[in-house]
Length: 355
Ligand code: NAI
Ligand code: MG
Image (tube, rainbow, N blue to C red; front, side):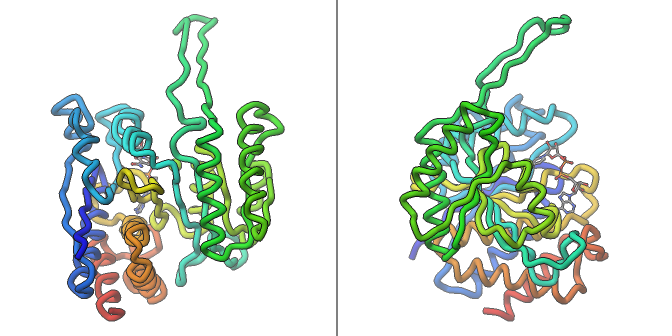
């Protein structure tokens, strides 16, 4: 029987708190389902590590991670270190070197949750964001620092290969999940080189999937539509920057950061994929024991789905919904008084009843 090897990186702030709850859920799954076995290895690569060693991870960090089936990540960031350091020395190297070129974010209003929009809405779509190139590149430079002629140049990198693989993944996903429509988030009216290439390649792929309808909207219009008519979306395909912004907006209409999960996927399986909540290390509530663990636990569910265990994914998600619908055990961000650990325990109990 396959033993899934999971690298666990709790990170900083609330990362370790919410990770503890996700690991409770993972342990429960293996206890009640004899066909699911796993082992975890924990890596304390975080701001403490940086303060001690001057590095977010050891020099051979990526080699150490390569042998795992997947990476479960908490969150990083701590005021002792400039914000770009954990991002560019830990998260980005993993995403880019492991070719996790798909960032997958479900925007789904779970049962028991209320949207912050005025009217009740049926919100259930996914954002597929390009995750390895685009606007988030280190190509560029700066000159004349501190002078009145000071300048900075930051280049966007769009490649035919990079665009076609994310677009193909999106249309294939739509096909496999019986979605009828893919919406391309673009801005090719103003960004005339890179976004025009993006549109051209996306449209070539769209032509290969005749059964799925294709539409193109400017990203600013999509932002408005997320608020006005989110029920019209099924799958939104976006570049790295646009997808980043749209997914925080998406999480805000569907319950907030405390419940927003994400997956960084290497579809070929040649490197591990990484599963992490959308939120950061939340220094304002770190150490208080009140962080909502649902985003981390849902991210774990996405990992199970990636292992081909959609059955376990669904059980975890239904158990989260059971707790939300009951409204008895909720953290303060959802209007409750429960601790992180109590919410984790409540989800574990629901899971045991479902198995
Ligand atoms: P944040 O997501 O950590 O917090 C934003 C707000 O949401 C805060 O008020 C926080 O208390 C609340 N919040 C976040 N997660 C929550 C949860 N699970 N339960 C209840 N409330 C929650 O974003 P912020 O404050 O902009 O950044 C804090 C640090 O995290 C920074 O160092 C930043 O660079 C880092 N960060 C790291 C990310 C990652 O590891 N992927 C992503 C975003 C930010
Ligand atoms: Mg973001």
